[in-house]
Amino acid sequence: MSTSKSFFEQVNQHFNKAAQYTSHDPGLLAQIKRCNSVYYFSFPLKKDDGSIEVIEGWRAEHSHHRLPCKGGIRYAMQVAEDEVTALAALMTYKNAIVDVPFGGAKGGIRLDKSKYSADEIERITRRYASELVRKNFIGPGKDVPAPDYGTGAKEMSFIADTYKALTSAPLDSLACVTGKPVSYGGIRGRVEATGKGVYFGIREACQNTDDMKKLGLTTGLAGKTAIIQGFGNVGYHAAKFLHEDGVKIICIAEYNGAIYNPQGIDIPALRTHFKETGSILNFPSSEKTPDSTKALEIECDILVPAALENQITIDNAKNIKAKIIAEAANGPVTSDANEELHKRGVFIIPDVYLNAGGVTVSYFEWLKNLSHVRFGRMSKRFEEKSQTKMITAIEKLTDKKLSPEEMPNLISGASEEDLVNSGLEETMVNAYQEIRDIQHQHNDQFDLRTAAFICAINKIVTSYKHAGIFP
Image 1 (cartoon, one colour):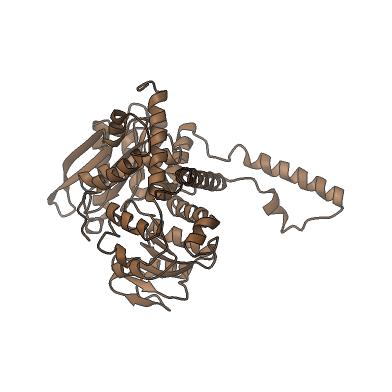
Image 2: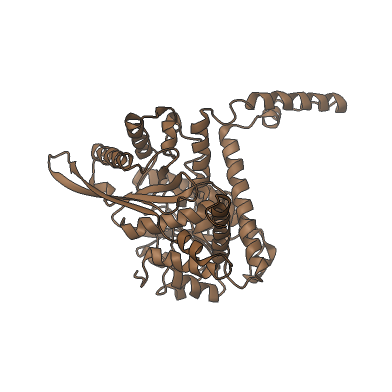
């Protein structure tokens, strides 16, 4: 689907709309909006068959108002300067909205990962990391990448290992990148973080009785229908947690088709089918829809685009029947389509807030790497002993004994994953209430995306002022 504006222009259109509702200095707003640095490079790859191929890569650092910069690395054929610049800008605003003290960055390599062997991907990733080191575009206090579309824990471990070998300060080297395997400095809960954050955001939005009443929906998630576009890491986990909380997932769409069942899709069973076959298609008790883009137009309560940008444009916006669009991907709704949908009363939970779960938990991983201690290690047993003493005292006072089955759950101390999930939930809930309050303070005259951008702009301006850069 085509769009008349570039991705970065669309992000800036949202910024400009929000900036109108602030009284900040125009020069400062111009500084916030601009991308500070973009590094483009190419390098030769010697393939397994001995041939040479030129690989192109980018890293954009949108804002240095806070350091380090933070943002993922994606491997896809769509990667280009405009895309990484736009995504880096979104990271700047996203970090501000959820109070993660980073500037925004993004990177990528233009390639189709399926056409390269595992050894070739490792060589590409390590060379990419060495290029970032050479140009000072990576480091625990400079720029900290993470996984994105087409990358995962394995690629992040290659980057960490390469950085460690090249840096003159290896002590904190694991903090140069997040999303690593747990065995190599990663953190429990990071894999599902973005999808779980999407779930927390949707759940929080659906708790607002007045907003749901305007949409003709009941409060809460139970009984609502949803369509998920994308069954990768983010889409699957969003579907999983929504399914567990009573949402009926009626359609899942992927690049090669979609499956539909108005009675609801069994998400755990589909996950098993996907792992076994490599596809969601031919899943029992479901109808196949060859054109996956049409899945976006099926009537539902919640539509969750969890794939790539520009999925809902001015061309197909008129066909969207969902009452809520929850942007799990970056930029799935174009700026023009956003305006059209808002006029129609569609409630859009914006990407700049909703998919911030990943960077939130990446922040926790970064802190873990700098502190060199696992969260919960020093407190878990103490909490269990304290809880046991309290339960024992209650049993003596009441002359009643808890069963052996009940005791472990009541006395259990918080593990690393428990603490990560608690911090993620706290972050997503507070951030939603903050941007919804901004919208309410302006008498709901604009959408939630504009409120989120206002929130981000105000926080970044405050950061500049407290640094003494602007009066």
